[in-house]
Every structure is written in structure tokens, then in C-alpha cells.
Length: 391
Image (spheres, rainbow, N blue to C red):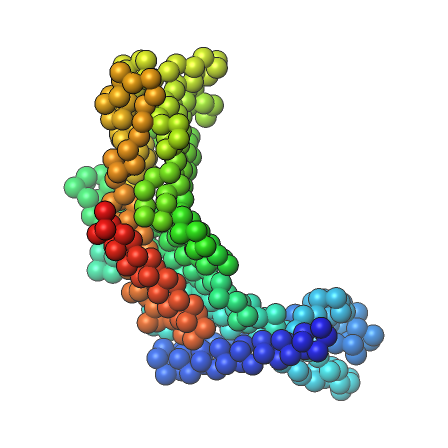
């Protein structure tokens, strides 16, 4: 096992050095950028036996912060092969052998952007890009992102932040800044996509997926007193297996005043209830006057309108099933009544954004993982299309 571990460490080191080389080439040829390097996660047996904290600080200052020597005494923090070995010389001319297991590249600046890279000897790589330009009507859109992955795994995570300036017809607030947040992550057998409030989780083993939307109560917006919690589980052909939507009304102090709840499943059909703050339950199937109240609450709900529309589609489908089956003892639910279009549109927005930025990613390992993700999605979409054609 020890031999295998040593072999793995060598593989990690080789892959990290390959990634660092690809970034250097990309940055110098494509961006014409410069950057500041810093070595950290240090260990030195010599320094551990000879230097106090004050002397370490003076040694750092001598090298103008290029080397960070905190935890240099702690051998338990050593993981993997060192990325850099250096001999540091103090003011008295004494030499110290040092190992560094993390290298950061700071302030990799180009005309439009500022980038940061971090490489660790355990195989972790972190990369971020921040747009330097201020939003104006001439340059109304900025995109920033960060990514994390390990060279020994196919897993990865990318977070994207998009800021956009738009003009409105309201003279009191003619320029409005809108923000969209996207996350894509692959973690073993789970693929997770997030667009603002909408989170989609694929189980790659079963082909099933769940869609979650959580909208918190905003105390700053007294005109809207609503929060909601929504989740559906879908089969591999996007048919609904079960789902629940909880819509809460709140008092001014944030406490829940009342709750509307819609539960849907293939086995139990549709259930719809209202719960007062005192715990009284009202069956909405027997009280049609209250049945459509949640729709009005969702229409005025603040936040991402796409996510509100998905929850609204779910409650609408539940209400239609109730109205169609009022004479029945059990309210059955036809999953085809639930409109998947807005969920698919959210997924497509995530995919298109990642495709548009893929060409500017400087890390070959990250590009490989993004391509793997896009291939997985393409395969799923083709399989779903074939399934829909057969129906």
C-alpha cells in the first residue's frame, strides 16, 4: 500500500506540473498577462529546529512575501510530493532546506480580467476569474467565475456569476443591475445544476432527477410576505413520480402566518391542505374558495420569476387534477399535465453559458471535465428524445 501511495503522489505531481505548464503557455500567448507567485504550505526540518516565529517573519520579509512559512513546524500537514524545493538563506547567511506544497498565482491581469490560480500537492486546483470593468450602458454585462477540481478525480465544480445592467422605463430607477448565479458540479454519480433558485440533481446511476426550489422570506420587502419550498422527483423520461409545494405567508416579523401545501404522487394522487398558524387544517379539496389562493401568492413572489413559474405550474396542475376529479374518492394525477418546459429551459441556459465560456478556460484538465459533463448531458437529451418519440 505504501508503494502504491508513493506512485499516486508521483502521478499527482506530474499532472499538476502539466496543468501549470498549460496555464503558463495560455496566459503568456493568449492573455499576455503577468502574475505574482507565492509558495506556501511549507515544511522544513531545519527551520523547525532553529527558528522562532519572529525569525520566520523576518525571513519572509527578506523574500518579500514570496514564501509563506506558517505551520512550517507541523509535519502532520504534509500531503503528497512538494511542488517546490528551495534553500532559503537568513540574514546571517545560514541555509535552510524548505519544501512547499502549495503554489498560488495572484493578480494574473489582462486588460479586462483578473485571475487567480492555486495548486496543491494533494491534487486540488482552484481557479477564479473576476471581471475588472465597471458596468456601464456601453459595457452592460460582466461574467465572473471560479472552479475547483482534483487531478485524480473526474469531479469538478464551476460557479458562474453574471451581472447585467438594463434600462427601465421608470425615471426614478432608470438603470437596474440584475444578477444571475449558475453552479455546475459533478460529484461521483450525482450531477448538480443550479440556476439562481432552481437546483436540478441527476442520479447518473438511476437516470432519475429531482428539482428543488427554495425561496426565503425577505423581511426587507414588506409588499411580498411569501416564501416557498418546492421539490419534485422525476423519472428518466421526465415524468413526475412525486412532488410537494409548500407556500407560506408571513407576518411582518417573519413568523409564518399560514401554510398552503400541495402533495402529489403516483400512488396517493393529489392532496391539498391549508394550515393556520394555530394548527388548524383545512382540506382545500373541500374548500374551493381557498384552492387558488396560492397562485396569487406565487404571482407576487419576489426573486427569480422562472422558479416562481415552475412552482406555479405545479400548483396549477394539482388544482386542475382536483377540479377534474371532484366526484372521485381519490384525486388521481396525470404527470403529463405538469409542464416541464421551464425546467428544461433552465437546464439549457446553464449548458449554453458553460459552452460560451469553455474556450477561455486555460486548464486542460478542467476543459476535459467540462467536455465530459457536456457529453453526459448530450447523451441524456438524445435518450430522452428517443423515449418521447416512442410514446
